[in-house]
Length: 258
Image (cartoon, rainbow, N blue to C red; front, side):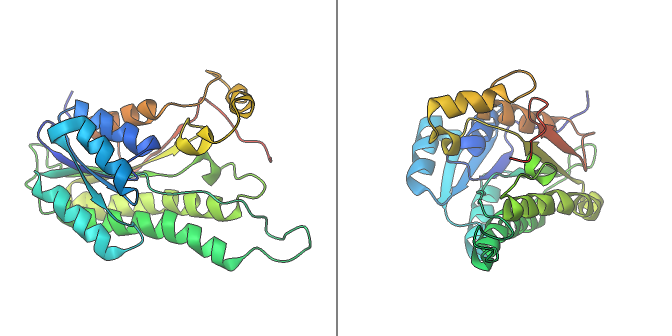
């Protein structure tokens, strides 16, 4: 099957120190990709890079800071042909359109989530695409792939997810125009919309609540594992005919109103 050659290529993974990002780093390193972990958590990024050895390095920084993003992309591109960009950095927020006392949703909280989840994705995607476009094309004209992280909340937004759903809907919305823009330089753009995953955020919940969440999944009745997310990223990178598509990775779940 024609596919992108990854062995010896370079990648940048935002939010790569933990959760979905770390699962992606592990999958790509196993495939021979040199990974640059870009994360605000410098300690966690260093620990993972040290564990994985010579194919992993890190940059401490914030995806909302364009200078940090450029520095991380530059480091990733120095380690080999930059072929893979994965945006996993992001967070959630709970807040209704109006609060119980009928006061409106806080603008600062809404803006914070858009800055991190949307602007952060934009910053790294655009800067990485610029670097990827300067790489030598592979035999089929391909230069690389960008994978962004949305959420099932982009489609099944629950009560209190106004800011989060708006941000993840924007990530989905950026995909098609980005794929069309970058087709001329042989860069594919894809999006994963994960459901309920066993990440550090869910790890803060009591085990009883974690099990209840797992039982809400259609099948298999379990929380997703970061390794499963990483496996899908790896497949997306290898399968050159996947482009301009959002894939729900969610065990078939459809989120209820609350």
